[in-house]
Image (cartoon, rainbow, N blue to C red; front, side, top):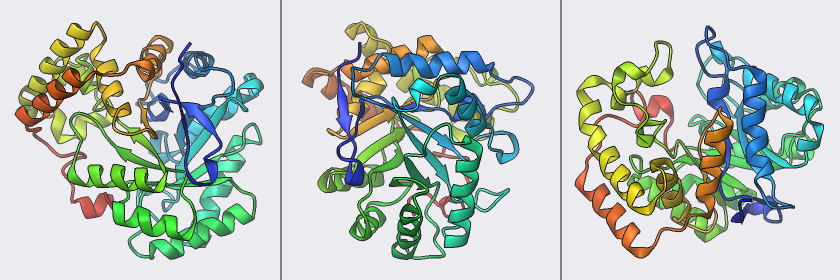
Length: 344
């Protein structure tokens, strides 16, 4: 059994979740030629929930557009899961990203579009599970965060979901949003190869305001586990093919940090993935690493990292590894951050 738990923030401060969350995106954001069998996905979800102590929920993360051609495939998978295993509905805390313009990845936090998004999410879940938390997938720079928050509060008043989250927002935006209505969780990318100055600022602001941080891609989209040995290990159609960090000219250089992480993990008798997750979990009392997993064994390995505490010597060694290696390639595809609305 996993023992370490965390309380969420804001309006969800009385809700206890496991120290390690479960990102579900890659269960359905994949080449349609290689679909994941339902039961394999179901066992991966159940494993994490079953490992938690009584009373704790598993924080699971889905998205309105986590499927081929930005479809609702991920939510459809969840609806089938909760239909088959209704007893797991109360044992999970469901966070869903949405609020993008249909058929695009551009955010639109107008009341009309947010209502459309939330209604689609709820309709796709078919009443099998209440959406606990809704988060706009990106900050809409065409509307003030204060107005966007007022729109989200209106939808809470309409009982469409219970708690508000944000994603990829700056520390300043997080503070301004929380002043309008308490934020339960903020989702940002945090890992041993994504630890930017703004990441640190968001972590500090969240801790100051008592907001939980759901740290996505804690394993560098699989890179930091050491399981990907060359760019050829990534199949055609995999989104990582587009990321500059995985390109051949950067891949070998970036493997150096993976080698050092592996050496330290072996010394501690844990896996590189567990070291990466444990390090993130140690960044604050309400920081929740959120690795993705489509495999029961991997989910259990990830969850177990929630009980691993790194000693001071480990932290010094990790800091020296980070100082020694400069990561080549961008956090996303090399596109202008303004287009991706990173740190909005």
